[in-house]
Structures are given as structure tokens and as C-alpha cells.
Length: 271
Image (cartoon, rainbow, N blue to C red; front, side, top):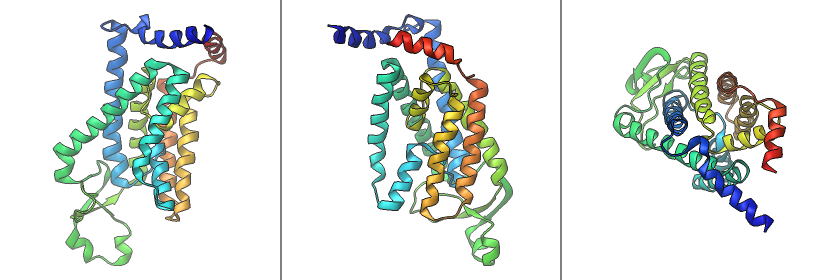
């Protein structure tokens, strides 16, 4: 009987009076999710993908597994689903619904941006030195100069590279980390996550005094560091960690850490 009452209380969270459908709180919460997802998806497409960065997350971890052991990238969906279920158990069903919406919105914004723009231009960076050259000019450079350039990633992996650019790594990760942090913080403030490792951060945050931003830094930096196992140098992991650090600090500015006493009260009420 007591078990049934716990299950009933869990589902009752779907009818949280603070965010009833059509209420002011409802529109604020879901409006935040939409805005945060748009910012996050665009930050990924214009600051992360063009530079080949891997700022944590389950996709970053699965990429390492794929390169080490040939694990199919499609397995990432199982990791996402497992974390989503765990998050819904610990944080309530409303969290699960919001996070599913976030995952879908990020995918949709990514898809529509790729379809309308990126498939025609490639993943062009917003921040670089201003020196963009054609593939023909790149081929005539000395090997020493070629090391200064990155290819403009194409929409399809098999498409030939047509342009190269000189990266401005530090400024890119500064602005990228700021954009990532703003997007994720807005999503967090609505009681959702972008999925993946962010769910772990929110669960640990609920039961500890550690801030969301610090947890994001710890978890995603660990994942970024795991890419060192691929033996492809330390530049990208270091730049990825810098981006993650800035992201975490921005999150803590927008979503202030909750006091430990408040956490204890939440846990007591949930018990």
C-alpha cells in the first residue's frame, strides 16, 4: 500500500500546480527551454563542430569508445535513454518530459540549420583569423604552413573539402563557452537538461551542496580528457576543457548554487 502511494505521488508531480498548462509559470518554464535549446544548438554548430572540439557529453564519450574499440555510435541512444529514466526516477516525471522536449528541440534546431544553411556552406566558423583559402591554394602551401589551417567541415563526410581557415582557438573557446553556458543555464533554470551527462550533474546537485556549474566542469572535463586515450595530441582536449570551464562558470552565474540547508529540506520532503 505504501509502495502504491509512492508511485502515485511520483506521477502526481505531473500536475504540479506551479506549472499548470496555460499558466504564466508554464509559459515561462517552456519558453526558457525553447530559448536555451536554440542557443545551445547554434553554439555547437558554429563554435564547437568547425573546430572539432569535444566538450564532454555522452556523444564525446561514445566517440572515444568508437575510436578505441569500434563501438557503434548508435549506442549513444541507449546511454541517453538510460540516463533519462534514471533522471526521471530521481528528479520526477516532469523533469523527464522537459528533458525529452529539450533533446528534441536541440535536434530540430540542428537539423533545420543544417538543412537551410550548412549543407550549402559547410560548418563555417564564426570566429577565425579572417584568412580563408581555397583547397587549391592550400595544396600549394608548404607542410609547415598547412599545419596552421583547419578544413571547413562539409555537411556530408564524403564531400570534398573546398576551403581551409586559420583558427583563432582561444577567442573561439571563450565565446563558445559563454554561448554554451548561457544555453545550458537557461535550460537548467527551467528544470530540464540537454540530456546525457547533464542529467548526472542535476541528480548530484539535488543531493549535494555542489553547484551545477562545478559538476558540469568535473564531468565534462573528465570526458574531454578521456580523448587523450586516442593519442591524437593534447591541443583539442585542452581547448575543450577551457570551453567547459567557461561554460560551468557561466552556469553558476545564471543558476546560483542552492544552499545545503535547502537541499536537505528537499530530500526530507521527497522521502
